[in-house]
Length: 218
Image (cartoon, rainbow, N blue to C red; front, top):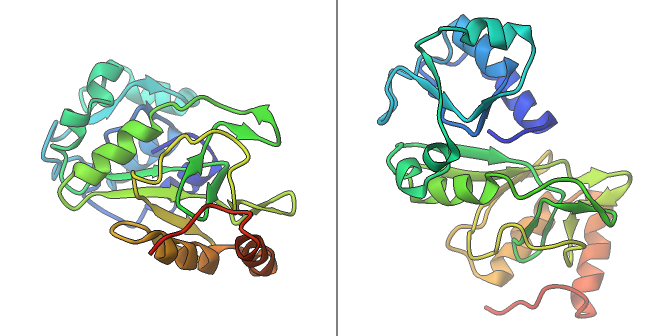
């Protein structure tokens, strides 16, 4: 799980699940709550069975008190938590990260918003690639379709490419899911337009028609 409102919202919706496992760069209050409720047991993990693995603790006293001397939680260095060879050994690894924007070819910007630096790359690329290589894994980028009235599905990125389109991901907004794995650029455009906010789809299509967007080939 990445850091932010969307990963937190996902964790808060998992209370009715069972036998979940955690391997993440950071552990927050949501993980502690799910462990306390029995949703997270780590008993079906193919690596580090029975243990929640994280790099750092980021939360309140609830998390820190629960983690104190708790053998079911281990903090490891990023050489372990983010290592591709480790991540690919975790079957059904679901990596959920957010982003600032995604362009119509599937490139992801997670660093700059409205010209301002909002964060580093972090572990997004590591976990996306790890989930792609994991047996049954799901590399997910989840984001609201708009921010401040502007579409977050864009014709061209307004910042750097944090995740390349070659690292094809599953993009999720409140309007649906665009699975970009194994698709052509033209297919990606169609899928991403379908999950953009309806009020912005015509403008995105117009930019595409004018050639003011990512190039597309079959």
